[in-house]
Image 1 (tube, rainbow over the protein chains, first blue to last red):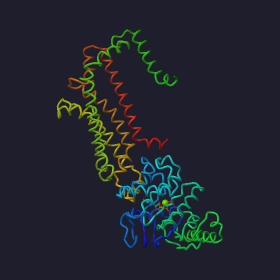
Image 2 (tube, rainbow over the protein chains, first blue to last red):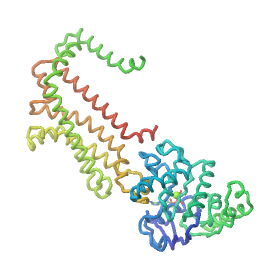
Image 3 (tube, protein in one colour):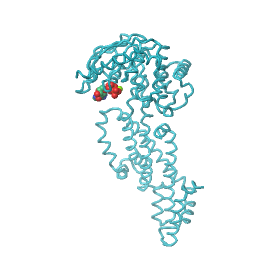
Image 4 (tube, rainbow over the protein chains, first blue to last red):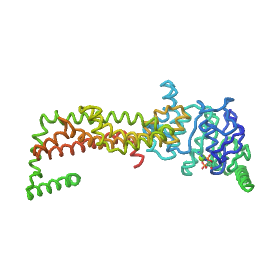
Length: 252
Length: 245
Ligand SMILES: Nc1ncnc2c1ncn2[C@@H]1O[C@H](COP(=O)(O)OP(=O)(O)OP(=O)(O)O)[C@@H](O)[C@H]1O
Ligand SMILES: [Mg+2]
């Protein structure tokens, strides 16, 4: 579904991303984990067609990405700045559908359903700045799923919310993914989060970035914040990823 | 009660001080508040309101609207293009630095001494703060929102004007006070009506209380306009103030 081949990005004279190759099958949820500043946002912006790569290609369903593909949605890290402050929650979720000329009836159904799915059915008339950070990120997620993308990208969406909210939002993402089956790429710097959410975890080195490992997560499909994290296998995987990243640091 | 006192206390004190001064000094050029109030009612609650005050306001409004259209209309493309900005900005800063009143004699030569001249004078002063603030507001639009628009196929018109509106409103606010000043100045040159003209006329005719009443009217007018402006601004930027609260 999504293929990244030999991706390289150089900013001026600074090589941020050296060589990334990986792919995601239809309906998979894959996490990309890497240390802070390793180029995760750069990678995501290249995949989204927001940033031209220096070399290498990205393709979605066999079609090379040259600009933002029409069937791709992104949840940005900066939730506070990705929603229109002068629009209500409902208007924010509805705007992309309006611009795409989705018929009114269907539009209203999609908006209501996705707001309900993220647990915000009762605040459609509120403005984003009246909501907590976690709720704002829920709005951004609702906007993404109402858009019915074939590929959903998320850039450290929960890096700025508290631990409690973060756990809730992680389970929300899992529930939505299990229900909708959307191909999802989830970027994070948090190893625990990556192992907990992903079917696979792509481990990145620090900058200039390469893929250290493409790791299959053989945990039971049903994940649970307490039970899953308590599994010995969870600890193994997490320790393994941690060691990989540390080892890569030692080499440099 | 306390609130009323707080709002009206200082004005009342000032009027009292004025009255005390005019009573004790007996200066011909400083009539007491009572006489000015009487002159105010006599002068302005009549023909002069229609013949002088309203046309002044009309020209101010016309100049302000034209300046807004030109300022925002040019500011958006300049703000969006780094290349245009590099070319235009030094020139704009130069024009902004020219004090608009010195343009009055020039505009008189070019456009005559009728309403067009006066409106042009107002435009020539108001347009710069609006234009430069629009450029800055559009230039500094949020990158994440811009990415959001591109990603979700949202046309940029949803972003640009609203996103830059806090800056644009700041420009419009500066332009309003500049506009009032230029409205008066443009009427002091070669004019036969208007508030500025009338005040000069009274001064030349030694109608001192009437002259003071004109100044008072201008003060009240400026106050009313800026109150109205704040009212609009609060409605347009409701999301912005609350953001910063
Ligand atoms: N526009 C840019 N111009 C120059 N250098 C950039 C630019 N954007 C990012 N970089 C550099 O590229 C590297 C990777 O940045 P990027 O934001 O992709 O990292 P990240 O993994 O998302 O970091 P974080 O964990 O802080 O979100 C950083 O060292 C950064 O300084
Ligand atoms: Mg980042």
